[in-house]
Image: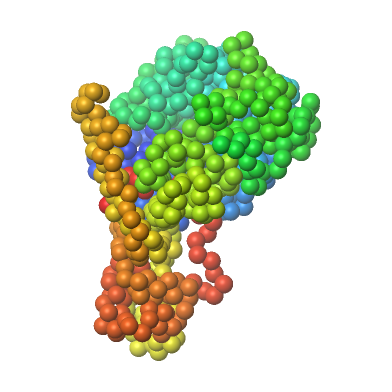
Length: 284
Length: 336
């Protein structure tokens, strides 16, 4: 199941996020990396160094675009100027698929720059799916939506988060970027079993996975992306890999970013769990 | 700080959230309510305000739309998002405005940012444009930067110009051969969209450079000596400059940021070119005292730096909506 129509029938392996502190290392040392994930918005600019760096990277590496501001779940319509810029970047990177979050973050044209949790209702799922279809049709590239970590829930919700995710992706006929760290963080904040979540989503739609580190506070867990991946998240990742098959996986490390080698080594730990998952599937 | 500032562009929240969510409009109403809660400035102790916009308890409002759990009340769950919103945005504005932060100090700068973003929350899909209205806000509401409002205004303009220079559009440069032999009156040149031409009342270039050097020294100190030897925040004060008229071009070359002081007539000529005036009229904007040799020398330099480009067609707009946050913030650039 690694290559499916939601990741454009690719088999990308293990990637890491392309981040500013690593630019010189990557461009000078040219390390072997399966692929890089870029934050689309960082490159939706008119010119300058961001695009120069991107072009250098594109000459040597496979790149997948990951967005943080499409806000599929916002009631507002997608901003045409945003879509136009995104399409220009899609043409530049030739990203095989594009991901963004199953969340909202803007209303009345005002942006919070946060990934806010959805109310898990059928009406919200319908609206969200419509927007995903609209964006996919405009961009002409497969889309995977990522589950976010959250710290609050709404009274109006009518289903669990994984039921909502399933409702949206089935309606939109799109893929899932399964972030197992986010599942773990939300499970602790809301008191559900993260394995129920992984078991409950349509595995055939998972086109990519994310792993990351988080930070524990006294009463909640924050998705900080500033640590190595914790053991419970790796275990959940192994479970998800057994369920979904070996899937393109990316380590997110966005704050207190260590050396390139440290980040890459952390990402490559996924191989241990992938091997374990392969063995488990063979035994079946 | 005034706590009920009306955010530009955001419609007022409903008094009570929908009990059931059955339509896109219900979704919008709920999202608008949550957004109001997020963009509400924090208290001086960096907590969520206890009172809601209409005077009710925020805890009561939060309980109407957010579930509590065994460890956190609805209010506390809302507060996580409210604090994250402000910490994130203040961090971005701080990174983009090291000079302004240095002038005002941490507390005063944070109050300015909260007042600014409470009035002008982001209207762009990325954080790159967050400070585009900051100079105008400083001028409109000088109380946040008093007694150095004029200087703060100049610094904010200078630092926004660096964002523009960092990732602004580069148009094809004009080569001398392209205009050789053409009648001067028929020649229209443009200036690069990434180039900002600033007429300033303070030598902010020197001041911001001094602030950055001081902060770099502090960072160096904090990495190399123990805490007791750290350079104190009050130490190494950078002298606040007195008024001095300067003319500045903020630009980039080979992907790096630079600024260059100009003579007043040179700045006027460049501005006239940027405004689409034909070559003779633009040169005339420099004034009668400007000698032809000077103009020739200036144009030679500007062409070498790639500042002159093909003029935009009449009615064309500069830039295109300005999107995207720079991957390399200006503060991390080589502008010095």
